[in-house]
Image (tube, rainbow, N blue to C red; front, side):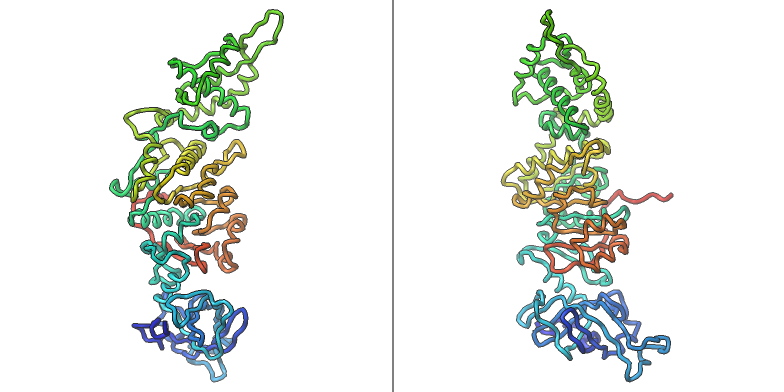
Length: 539
């Protein structure tokens, strides 16, 4: 592609800057020839600011067309107050810009690529880049399939309001995507802007919303909506013991063991058709153990409402074997005291009436796993799961995430989809132990791409996310961060310039960094017209 073709439709002399006067290994310097470029302020727009830095420039060279970025802009006269305008410069005054070379377009190509060891030359002409050249550069940045249809534009370049950002889905998602930012930095708005493009282009998405923020963002024709505990249930038998421990946030292994014993006892009572808990005090030890041993892998169902009473009933011990040969369970007050706090925690969880209706076998309600089973095999079908009715406790949210993650990764022949989880830091760690809730998510992050499952996560603090999970994220949308610890977490994904500007980002402004891009991008996300319940009330 020639220079004239790049500037087709505009007067190329309006964008002429000057000539290259110095060339170094790290950068190049050009001197301004076109004084009218700076003196005519009426031409200055967001996309045309030649008197500042961070602008892209095009350099016409013998080896091709270089793309560079201005990182320094200076005039030779130190006392600029002596000049009423740029045109007042004396004959020995000069104006210089320092250019960082980013990419090269070879004469036979229509895309930019890394410049490698090729450099600019003395007297090469320098021009300010247009918005159209920005778009060509953006399309050149992506390491993705040429035949893939890009998503509709969801953002513009900062200071380039006319240059829209339209990326291919694989660029954003194929190494998993995470949106990071402090409260009120525009994180949720960015999340919805991208989800809007995914759903509106008939690509599959599985959305888990812990707050109900997106409940009216999509129409019933676009997406299937479920509300856990209201119209959707799951059988208690489908939950693994590890997931029960996460749900009730067992503090240690002893509480986990008691929970396992109690659930096994309730499974036995369900098996024999008794709708009550298993009272063990005074019962024959051998007979009880034989009964519990008869519970098979098929006997998974039980009445979860009886769980607090059953844990209390597990407060028994074997008596001392004296001459009376007593082989019956005795009440153990130490165990009862130890289990008391755990019982209170479970009872508190159950005070939410939606909790009990969720863990049931109501035939008049959807079954969560059955709906997901249908979803993963249907093309162009999206699914929204609202978990807000189950309460804000991290335990139940972490359990649902883990349950769904392990279920979808076990399916075969699924249609590729985006798995969106809002506020993933809610499920990072238990408040009562060091156990992580990310077992299923980590498995998805490591193995999900092979099956076409792409994570899209949002979080306020990247430090709260499992280091293993965070290490699998290849693309990040970084909003404003203020704490040094948070910035250090993401600094390996940013260059020095981007790190200095993380604290300066306004609401909606984002640094997009990805292993699928040649260069980091500073963009401003366009707010979606869809309904979103994230407004901050006025005091």
